Length: 247
Ligand code: BGC
Image (cartoon, rainbow, N blue to C red; front, side, top):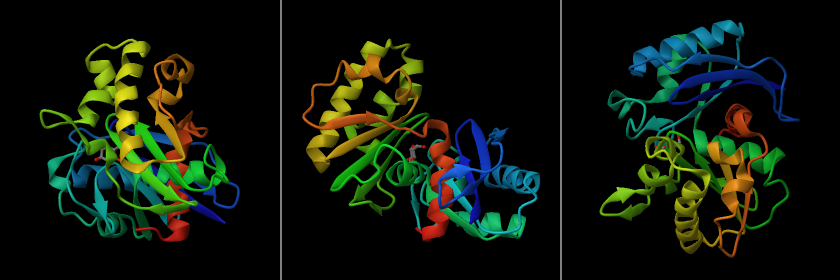
């Protein structure tokens, strides 16, 4: 069975058809730059262009980069403040005529890793952490997702959240070497380890590339591994979330 998977990100909106039994993309990925400003209307228009590109009539699974509850955006986060309070699935459905299932982007990436990647067949507590414009989290127990966690918003110090301190955009903003970034991530993962005592931490986004240079800085008593699906995890996981009707 195929589902159209879409990953809405801060810089690009990407989609592909996904075979949800194998987790493979059955078409080329198509990417459209995220409109600036990324208002609900502008993003909904881009979603429509993407759905038309695939000439898709059917279910769409869509990963979304903000705090969510049952498909409703709780705050606009790194996207746009006008998203707050918007029922995202209803908006995209009315724009395209397709059924939409909305899932947090890090939950989506985690679903892909749990089913087909670094978290496959891992028992116990697994946490996926994505490091991009923001920091996202997906928390799993024996392969089952507890949706909508926001561990990027854990406080670092002086009211500053860890996302501001250790995301990939913080690395770029502060022009950090891999070693310096690794030190910040060490602090973050140490704190995460204290909060949830996971059996495995899977790291996605910018840090999953050149991971060896970063992991030298980690001295924490938990397995920390890079994601396998990298850029495609968001698309694959969004399609899976639609299959499982995760909200
Ligand atoms: C948002 C999360 C999202 C993460 C990655 C954070 O700013 O609060 O919901 O998963 O960015 O996009």
